[in-house]
Image 1 (cartoon, rainbow, N blue to C red):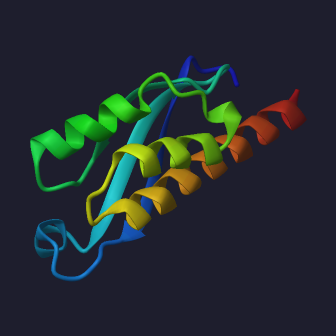
Image 2 (image 1 turned 90 degrees about the horizontal axis):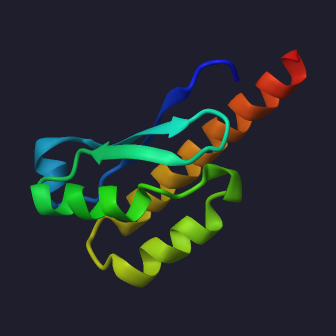
Image 3 (image 1 turned 30 degrees about the horizontal axis):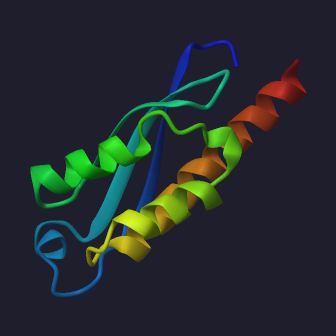
Length: 110
């Protein structure tokens, strides 16, 4: 990829009867990542609390998307015990898939 960083997003339906679901219908997780390494530079999501958003940001920043979703999902499972776990897993997998597709299309174009 020729640009220094990319913006990626993942979406998932929120579970019923959660505060976040009352505010938003879907969880949106967005990250910026270095194009060449896939390292997550920043992250944000539509969780209801600042503490939750900060926790997810700290969990994601520094992770290399080139490793795929499994190690990051495992890290999430070991540390996050909130009601949005499955939605976050879905978003993480979607972001990793997006990065993989971008990497493959960039490699094919060269």
